[in-house]
Every structure is written in structure tokens, then in C-alpha cells.
Image (tube, rainbow, N blue to C red):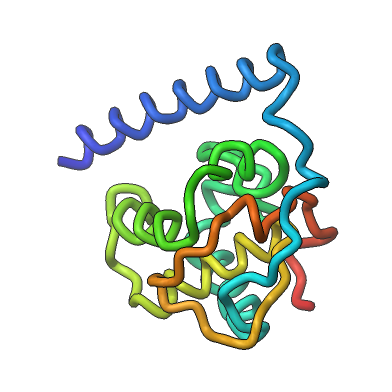
Amino acid sequence: MREKCVKKHAARKSAGFAFVVAIILGGGCGSASAQGSAPGPFAPDQVDAGRKGFAENCAECHGKDLSGGTAPVLAGPEFVGRWKEKNTAELYKFIQTTMPMCQGGVLGNRAYADIVAFVLWANGAQPGPDDFDGKAQASISAIASGTVRPDLSKTR
């Protein structure tokens, strides 16, 4: 089972690389600076909890600063370009069902929601008044600019 999952992950990584090359050669997916002005559907405390959850469960593959490594980049124009047509509930569902690699669902719902909040914040989204529970359907392009916050591996 794990071998099948690893092969599937390798195929996704190849597709992600092809996507990046297409963006570079095609001039990108539009201006990230014109995106991301609405507040995100997550509270400020979720950012810190999500940073901790990310460091413990995601950073080994995605990098402490979300810049990728053995897994896709999770911060910047590449991430926002990939997710701009999706909403926060779809991002939550994807992460919750597939991560950590080949172990989707092993973290609690709150941990996944906090990690999504951290990833959105890392991409320029601003916290709002309510906790994110995985159900809010905010458009990622409306809340995240793709502007990577400096020093993502340290607490705010």
C-alpha cells in the first residue's frame, strides 16, 4: 500500500514540476498583487497553532519556510496560482485526506484547520474574527496574495 502511495506522490510531483515550467514559460497566472484583499476565514490564534502543527507534520517534506523540497511549494505565487480557482474548504479537504503523505486523516480536524490557516497566512491572507473549521468556503484568490511573509519558521 505504501509503495502505491509513494508512486502516486512521485507522479504528482512530476505533474507539479510540469506546472511550474508552464507558468515560467507562459509568464505566470496573472498578478498576485491584485489578489488577496478580503480577510481570511481563520482566527489569529490558529496561525500560531498551525505553525507548530506544520513544523511537526509538514516541514520535513514542504520545508520549514514552505518553499518545498521533496513536496510542493506551499507559499508564494506558485501556490496561489495552483489554488486560485479553489476555496478554503477544498484546500482543507485535500490536505486532510492526503497529508501527511500516505497517512491522510491521522491528525485531528482542528490540527488540519490550523495548518490550513497557517498556510493561508503565509501567503498573505489576513486573519478574521472566526475560527476556521474546514467548512468555510472563502475563495483563495480573494484572501491570499501569494506574497510570502518573511521568516515563516519563527513565531509571530
